[in-house]
Image 1 (tube, rainbow, N blue to C red):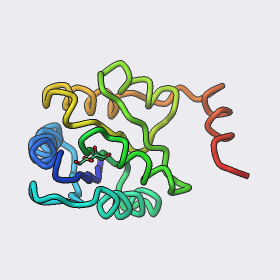
Image 2: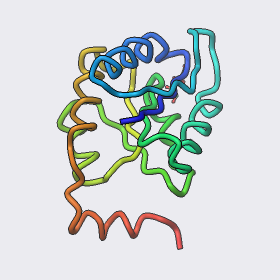
Image 3: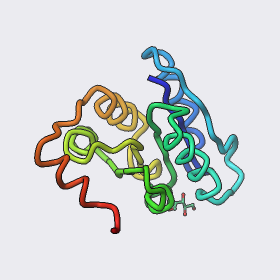
Length: 143
Ligand code: RB5
């Protein structure tokens, strides 16, 4: 898969190691920054990732900040984005199987790096269940 990654300063170290892990697993990684631990605003990095997912420039996205909430809130303002927060691998499975999240969001300050890798692998490998979940997803956008 071609996976876009965005992060703020709180998740920079995790981003570097997760991107290397994803490449080892055979994925192409497009890095939307930030590229250091200098304090930044997560929204400046979430919007370009969301645009890339919406335009099909990447197959899916992974976003990380301290809690994950700033990234998730920003990403979900985009009509074509379903950004889901996951903090263990079972939620990583469900956020794809049930919610078909096209951006996985993780809270770098509250999970281990090993867990972040497990969650990402699980989310990538899990297919969307469809069926009743597709009906529910279709009702998410504001009419
Ligand atoms: C940065 O200190 C922190 O606020 C940010 O990483 C994130 O947790 C916001 O939602």
